[in-house]
Amino acid sequence: MTTDVEPEPASAAGLFGDRIELARAFTDALAREGEERGLIGPLEPPRLWTRHVLNCAVVAPLLRSGGSVGDVGSGAGLPGIVLAIARPDVQLVLIEPMERRIAWLSEQKDALGLANVSVVRARAEDVRLESSLDQVTARAVSAFRKLIPLTAPLVRDGGELVLMKGANAEAEVSAAAKEVRRFHIHDVRVEILGSGVVDEVTRVIRATVR
Image (cartoon, rainbow, N blue to C red; front, side):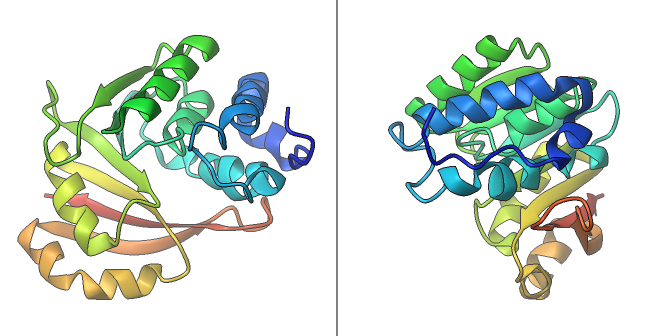
């Protein structure tokens, strides 16, 4: 493993419970191979747990038990693989267009034994799924107004968007008023997760599609 990888924070075990060994294995693999394979930048290993893995893990309680969740632009598996580890009761569909990232996601699914993961190579606007999803998430993909046309059509009536965002989340919501109306998005709000649990809180835009 890379020598300057961030030590595992104490909060990790609490967030993953009896799945912590899988989280460690995934984080170790990402630290070893992530930069070389173009999945993470050279500055990320010293903050891999805090900024990436735990940043995603705090979203896990928002997923609906027994539901199906799409991760648009899954990339390195953040948040898709992390959520699949934390929530074995949820089916994750990892949607990613790039072949080298698809290879990584498929390898991790097999290496970690994640029976609740399926990997789909497609752009979000082109993907065709057998059935609509209960929820869709995305992280570091695009602005909210651009994400709505990519994610809302994948969600069933009454389903939910759970989109991971940065400090400008509220401004992104304001800028997306036209798309919110066009795609029948309701109950849009920004929630802050992980306060008092992790060093860097996570912001998500949650909204219902009707």
